[in-house]
Image (cartoon, one colour):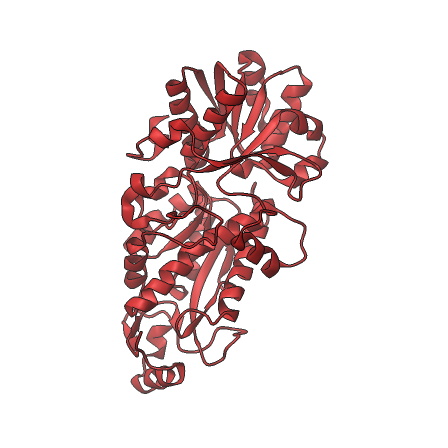
Length: 430
């Protein structure tokens, strides 16, 4: 790769008077052979490891204070800061380091708030290192597309497979639910399944996957929509107690799941629960629902937990340091790899504009997740169906495990998820 050194590039920008445009203006500038427009500066990042390098600014929009996923979102965000600190300490990307600390905003898991803070930081960032939530990201997806802003989602709706600006990781909620029921059929032989889910892409995508799998596996299926809030689960609890399904797929927030599981078991429900990945928080084992969770609850996940012995997991633990283990950290770390790959490809192509980053992301046929996802994951060039990651792990609640869950099934793809053709967002089929 041929380009000017960082000092020569800085001089070129100063002479051309283009630094202001490089900071977020509309006119495209050129730094050596690397084109830039928004969110890339010749000046170093705040607190840069190498003051001779320029800076790529990425935004983070997460649920940091009062939304239902804050217990996951805070470690997700901290892990992403640690990920990019490691990248910078390893030499950055091309002549740049990456900043994910200056433009961090709280969405409170509210779509309107999400869009508001996105608009605030949009003029200053090249892309989004994190956009947390399915309904919240849906509130900005049209703007992301019209502005060519590449974003790494902190969510797994199948809709992201159909959006070029979204660089998703792991199996979507739909396939995760299919794998959950394939696992349940093998272990429990259930005849009936109920999906208890939040409204919107998150809950409905998982419920749709459960419905499609139930139809394929000859199980009866019912879906019950519920609201976020531990005190708002009376309807879901009564629906479970009345129908008595063999298995309940739960796609809610952690506090919601604890209320549903704890109260139904206390009132005599004898079936099993399998939670979609965001339903879990290890703090639930300190709640009154802990006995029910330990006895009846299992957890699906798109990748393996904190303590796994992969190169990526080891690097994550080393970079994050001494913390209370939480698989929010694991997710935040995994979600960062595709953006690193896309930025590296854009630099290789000599085009760090928004359009250049998008073209780079769309061209990726694989991403190196350092063993945290299988070889071939991150195939955005392959299209929605071919590129879909289809592996899921299963965990059970376990007080002795670092994140409150221990593995009962390593990453696998069930026959239903393997055979399914992803021809549109699954929630449209609910």
